[in-house]
Amino acid sequence: MRSWCTPTTCRRWTGLPETPAPSPLSHTLVWGMAFASVCAAAQGLDAADMAWQFQRPAWVQGAWWQLFTSQWVHLTWGHWLGNAVGFVVMWGGLRLRLSARSLLMVYVGGLAGVAAVLAWDTRCLYYAGASGALHGLWAGGSVLLLLGVSRGWGMACSVFLAAKLVVPWIWPGVTLSASDFPVYHPAHVAGALGGLVAAWAITRVRALSPSQSCQGY
Image 1 (cartoon, rainbow, N blue to C red):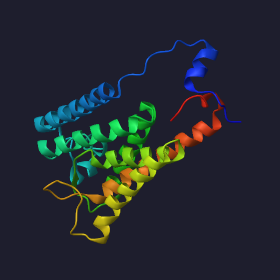
Image 2 (spheres, one colour):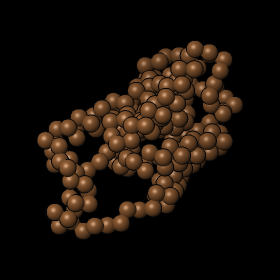
Image 3 (cartoon, rainbow, N blue to C red):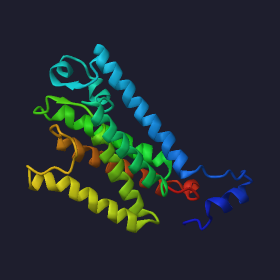
């Protein structure tokens, strides 16, 4: 049975203190700065010969961590800046309607999806960048919006995402990215699929946990 209580009334009935919600702008800036800082640190470590970019010959020889560290390193500082801005815009828009925990879970799903395609696709010789995982955040967040109370926003996000993923496959010479280097589109698709799987898992856990009925995604 679905509960009709809101988060506010749940706090009142359970005696939990009511805490003011953080400012959406300040929350987004904090998460954006954290994301940009981690990526910048990874960039510096890779420049210090830590070999964090994905290089298939090195991975075959045992550098398994590159499946994940390569998703924090970027090919150029312009590449880093573009993904940092993309993260802020995407996180800020989704965070108005979804919890930070749900967004982190779909982002991790995107990371896992990209790692899987890097290991599977022998044609991919190198990779660096967070764009694949960001597509997981985008896809997973869109599904959670569709299943929640913001179906209009969820549909809009889904349509834009579908166009971005489909166009490069229909017209190989066309790209919707602003980068001046080759874009590995399978990573975007795999990241989106990973985010979708994570979103599905979130909805299943919510459905099986009546105690979570007072909490949103």
